[in-house]
Length: 592
Image (tube, rainbow, N blue to C red):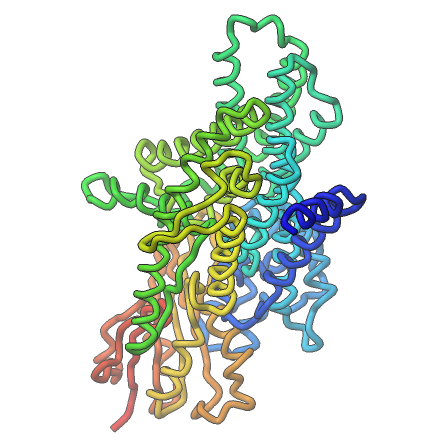
């Protein structure tokens, strides 16, 4: 019976269209997973920034130093009739620190799916990254095929990309990282082809040369950190050149095309240098700066890198409220750590085995060498430049697809079952074993479970949770509410008011004053200018605005807590703290 099943399986695999159909299945599952529950989470400020500039608007549409209404505050996420691709590029470079490729692509998409009331659609803003995230599945298949020339490895890698919790997290954000992953994966596929060409002393095909230059240029035009991918690729090629230095003249044909790629990539990167220099050191990147005298300066990059690698394939439940929620989180983390140790104990010998296989050695060396080089660059930036870029896990898009391919390559021997060592896998703590293929299915399913945690907001929560703060404001405000925050205005590119807009957008979406009876009155807002050029401070402006307001009122200030006793405002007991990552101070003004 087993022999018959094996023959039937082989016939099925050999049928024309089987592999294309299976890849289509991975793509469909990946897209469905990324679109699932897409708008359930509140938008946070970086997503708001993406929406504003994708529409071709400016954050300067917000009236500063005034008491304004909800619609006035949210003007930057409303469709403006004069907005165009030109305005997308203009305002993005003037107020933000990202290149424009994604925002230009998103402009028509956002206009096409605009809501009837003229407001941006959160589904539209998040669905485009979800589609790009699904495209990473076939791109990963191509990368794995280029590296290993094995459909099995390629399918395993595509399945892992489909199920990756980190990939799903990025795909459900209105951000540009999934597009960057797509370009980076294409570029790595070209690197894998180039490494094979060098090994065989053959010229790189002109079509691959052009594709590589194009992918590199578009990667940089999508996110500047893609330059780290290209540097790591260069280090891999330099390492290969050093290894084959004695036969340097034998691979001259392959070398010439790679020189063309290097020149084309350099040109595609240098054009952005003036823009990059314009925002270098701006407040939008200041959170990366560390202090060498602090212990965290030395420990955090290592710990955060390890966490980032783990999140690529495994994410425990990390969000829980009340005692049973916290108990579930603790159990999930402990089980995940135990599973991770068991998984690594299987993958490390498997990758060593792959390294000795002639048909997979080259690809594994290329992808593994790239992964090590990219992380070496990350640590160099952390410790030598003092910028902890491991703090933002999203920046690991630089090497993320390479990590997925390494895991997929490590799982392949268990599915093939050619070596006795990989036909069975012993389960931890119990005297039982499972088959190699069962082990592979289990690994993919564990990634899928982590992705479902992400989708249903049990892991990888948004950085700011306005949906947790707004009910607190409603429950503890007995009077009309004014919400205010300072916004930093500098000589360098600066987006203003986006944190306040994220709060206001969530109010409009789920706590709309027109239909929500929990508001005493329609809330008003203040965005107070803190200008480093003119020296304008927000406190004086706030005091002037308060004198003109009808009392009593509840004043909520974020990231800001001046003494307003002289203005008749006091903070009641428990009126300050953190909720949903917002730091707040709640004042009651003019109440008896």
